[in-house]
Image 1 (cartoon, one colour):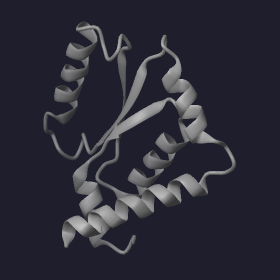
Image 2 (tube, one colour; image 1 turned 180 degrees about the vertical axis):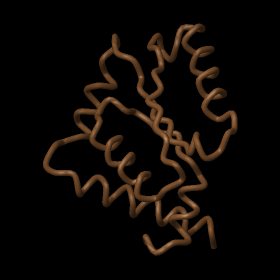
Image 3 (tube, rainbow, N blue to C red; image 1 turned 90 degrees about the vertical axis):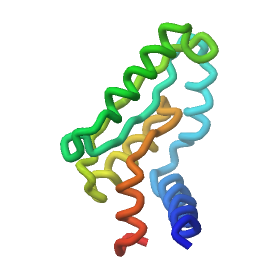
Image 4 (cartoon, rainbow, N blue to C red; image 1 turned 120 degrees about the horizontal axis):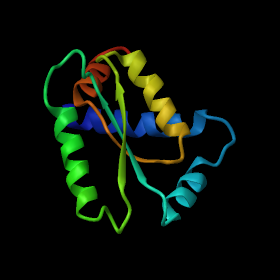
Length: 124
């Protein structure tokens, strides 16, 4: 049941975020950015770094460094866009908006803890 709730939440969130941010054609902008062979691949990393003193940030940065040293992905370097959500739903939503509006961000690594909190909360 929890997995189904999380899946439904993700779909609803994605649809709302895509439909709520004006008339810009962000998917088209993102496709154009992805097609540029000389650009980097930006990946968002959202985690409560200050709250949890774990090694998520360091591990992700090490992985990106190793991938870039090995030639990147299809010859393109990866760039992390790191943001701290402080395990706060409102801050997490602001960060989500910023990533949705940025056509250069191709993917996001997100704090599962924040997702679980929002699924149990009154934000559905």
